Amino acid sequence: MNARFTRFGSPVLGSHANNVYSEIYGMDGNKYVDILETSPHEIVVISRLIAYLHQKKTKGDA
Image (cartoon, rainbow, N blue to C red; front, top):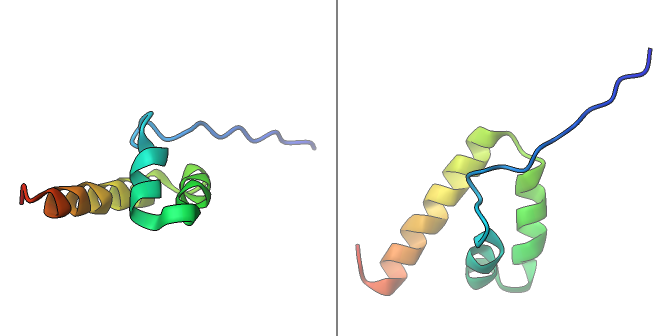
């Protein structure tokens, strides 16, 4: 039996996720986004929340 698996991108990451993670992780940001694209959505949500809080902290909003 042949099975075909299809994985859809995470809607949590959004279109500007590469920019956000590149800002936080530098050169490894794109690799990190690739890893998140294959991760369970729960992990993506937590990661994106941490990135959001980091942005707020560095901009002085929190």
